Length: 410
Image (cartoon, rainbow, N blue to C red; front, side):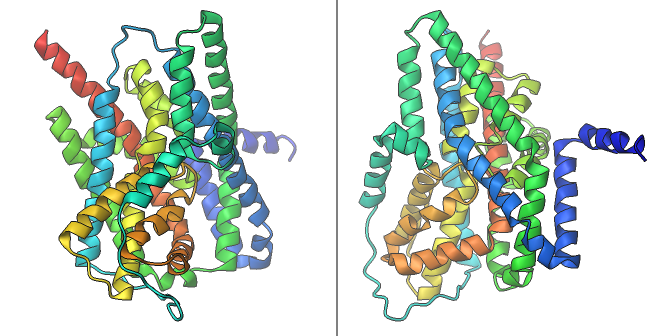
């Protein structure tokens, strides 16, 4: 018996992280089915894991972006601009897909609207004002509150300033980046245990019955995400590379998307994406900046979530949406998505911003957010998988496309 225990432990350690997570998922479902009272007590394990992700994600983005920019040498070739263009194009295109799908397959929600006044639709100015305020937020406050737009702004500013510092300072910053990345990898290694606790406690408390009432809404959400992942993104990559995009698309979904699906954090999945970019042979000076940047602003899945849930509320309340308003919603959703937190559930808290376009008060908007949390077991996982895998996909498309362009010119 003593001799067999180390063997079992060694076998588990040799399994890939994805396999370990799947084992944790199956174990959580089994515990919820056969011992629900025991399963409820595992909620603490899931909370610890989620809290750890929330704790490391802001400092990870701040340090990685700052270190990457500070250690970038003058004259080195990067492809950040085309990657940024692809990020923004993909996010906006995802919002448009969500608008079309929500129009073709409208969803209805159960909302308490009595004694709540609904005002006329507003403009985009408040969204832009809040975005600007997020950029100039106090750096300590930004880190404490996971304001990733503020974190990104300060990281870029500090990185540019430290580029002119001495070699020793930049080396220390590089070592700090490696240290933070190591801590995040350690947290991710506990993902199977965290997923076990989250799944077991959620199913034991709510059961599958909580999801039945929102099957249609989930189908629209997940359908949009699948369409973007398997149709829209390949079209964009084909436009960039002029060759079959699916080998690259499938690789990114398999190597990055599956892990992100279970960790539910784009920021925490950064080390996975960095490693995948390295295996794909991409430029380190490019992906070391674009991957952390993508975890902050490349949020196609978040744009879909914000748009679909907002239009579900709009349809429920009987508000008419014309084409100009739909286009404006797509823009707002893309802007809101860029400010979505890189941790689980971040996009849901930005739904009130999009709802404000239609004059939907916060009392109703927060009910929509609550619906989002109910279906979040699947919605947030699929959203994060799309977001994170697209970070690598667009980085690879831009790098490979620019390389082939340079070879043709040579």
